[in-house]
Image (tube, rainbow, N blue to C red; front, side, top):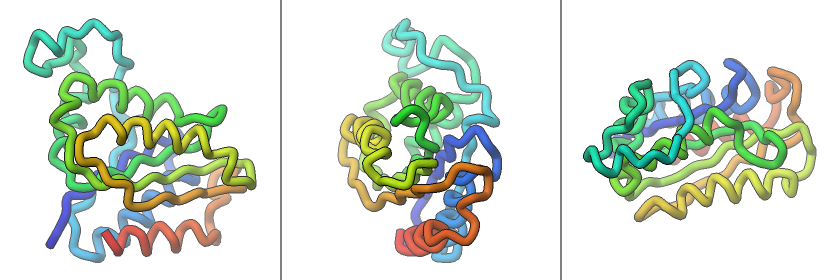
Length: 179
């Protein structure tokens, strides 16, 4: 049965390491017959949440008219959410964090999702990703019916394209095929 897969590639660098891993996940999932879309928040106009709670009084409509309403609908409609980010000071980057925070407008509608996480870091140890993974899992903990299905720890990659030839690309492709 075909699933709707939404990949949120948080990397601010198009063709950056986490973005390239997303491409392989996408290729594997698409070749398995799934409906797959990758969105790069860095290419969208998505402001940060101002905690004004306009959305609470306006049936989930945000006070800010930007690209988030369309993206949030895609998140609600997806069966699978792939959240990808480079590690920035042991956390996720601002682009992905803004998306996560802006889901507050309709957060109860984002439910029953399978989650996959992709992280990349210059550091060669997985422990450098603990706080980043905790941040991603923290969002999923707020999603009713969330199930963690896989994690890719792209360690030891810093320069753009450093992930080329690494086992992370194969891992992502195979993980995508298995959704």
